[in-house]
Image (cartoon, rainbow, N blue to C red):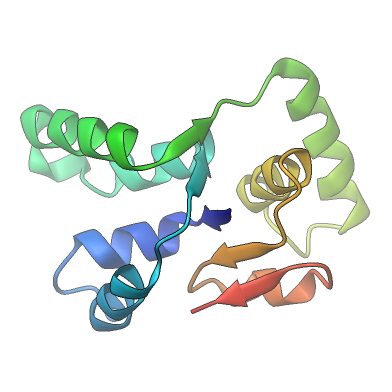
Amino acid sequence: MLFIDSSYLIALLIDNDKNNSRASVLANKISEKKLINNTVLSETLNSYINSGGKLTKELFSMINETYDIHYLSEKEYEKTIDTYLNYDSAINYNDCTILQSMKKFDINRIVSFDSNFDKIEWIKRIY
């Protein structure tokens, strides 16, 4: 199973994103099960904020059909704060929610264009 970051999803969905062509190549190579969390969902949907509600709803439906979504619990958000403090703000809070989801599902690979994940020694970033 792979974790999918919003930087990859947004690049895949927005034609003029600087990483769009790389994201398209990766999309054709990825065949295994893919997981996102509610943070990635929010970040991705927010990238379409000026596109109107109908397009955002269609995007939500497509994401919901394509990816497994982990909705963090209150307890997981509390653990995320500990993770954030552990990295002393070197990793932003949203990315710490991703680390929380990856730990829960024992995932060590992430598809992302965000080099901050390279700071986490147990993660292999695919980009």
